[in-house]
Image 1 (cartoon, rainbow, N blue to C red):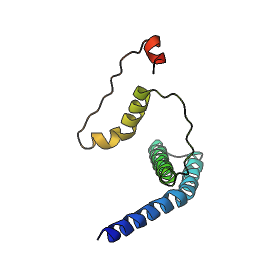
Image 2 (image 1 turned 180 degrees about the vertical axis):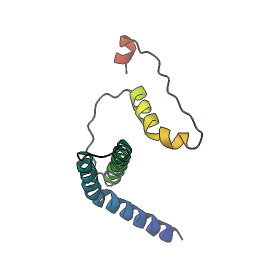
Image 3 (image 1 turned 90 degrees about the vertical axis):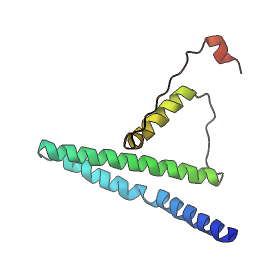
Length: 124
């Protein structure tokens, strides 16, 4: 039973990895065609729909890039750049990322950070 579960998980990771590698190119091509169509004369409603589609393509591309990063991390191929990061900034980015799906489920989130004194920030 465990072997079947492990095999299923391996297949799922393989499919996810393939999607993360293969989908960015066609998405970029679709985005480019949508951008080109914006350069022609059209009604405001049409332009707004195209801009909205471009934004959704960008969100999908970001998701795929993040999936690729996860796949690389699982295989120890991800190259990390070590440095100082501020947790409150990272939390705000995460909240912005997940806010649309949370609002659709009537969920709310917030981030409140305390001001750090320079001397506390230097201590580890």
